[in-house]
Image (cartoon, rainbow, N blue to C red):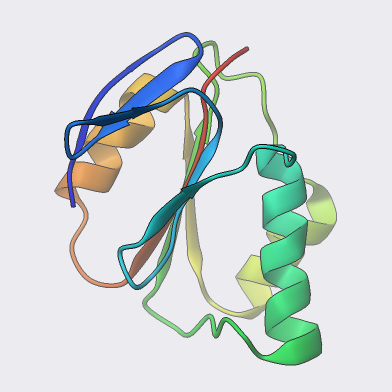
Amino acid sequence: MRIDHTAFGEITIDGTTYHHDVIIQLSGENRETQKETVQEAVRYLAYCVEGRGEVRIRKGRQLILGSGQDGNVRLSPEAGAFFAKKKCEVVIKPTPQAILAFNDAHGNKIGLFHVTC
């Protein structure tokens, strides 16, 4: 899976353009987060790990967070502590730089990309 491009309000993954925030799951599947913000997606991911075990964060996994075109999204202290406890590396960069980090990353990775602000 390769992220081709991002601009304000859009992101192109493997030739398909999305006009909403996107989550790329460990399986490589991606989905638009039509009613979620990236911050809500991070909280949901943490909830899944702690509450229902649907997603398992293990040592050596990486969360790459595209924090918007201008880098305005921040990870909450609670979410940061959660990922630190799970020994999951979190990379937060403005979305244009985050897509480069995602494309260059190897191994198990999750991508959350905010496409505005």
